[in-house]
Image 1: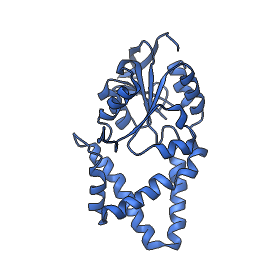
Image 2: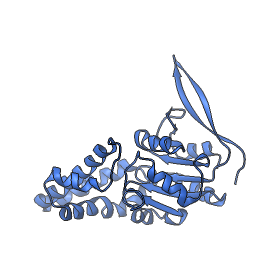
Image 3: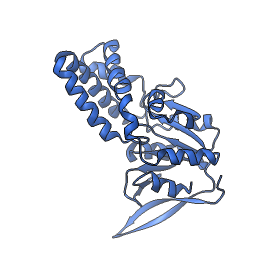
Length: 251
């Protein structure tokens, strides 16, 4: 493993320039990744799923509309709960059912179908370029790797053929966690599982308001993919792509 220092820049905007204060991480011992939108490109997957939903709806309009409402309100419930001080994951389904007027069993089947199972055959073709090379290099350097997602991740990791790289995989629904990001609880449980310290760990996600804030609350350096090079916020720095991430981490 590289023992030299690497740096994450925290941007502070002053007039037209940017002044950087440097957060030093002496040595990377662990990297934790978000899943959706981070390990794979989410937008093309969403477009493909929308077309699949429309095709299904042509043959079964009533049942498909009912299933779509369950998924829509489930996603909206998640964003609503994130704003609460204690965003309990178990409340997401009941809140979605309240909005869409379905019983939990019926809504849960639709959510599992369209959010967990239906995308599996699409994911691998939208893997983020360079992610396998990054994971391979990190693993060869002895860096511990984990995945922390708001949704169950194992099926998607198998579909992406990335499962062997990660020693710990957790989601908000796990009994040890039970809270959605940006609560730091899941990331703190992850650190314990990986047996790494916050000051030696990097959390990589794709949403500054969620993943960046999670990293900040857990005392972990955050990196947000898909942001302009040099962009930054409280607890995170942005990079446009995986090669830029790899260069930042010196892996």
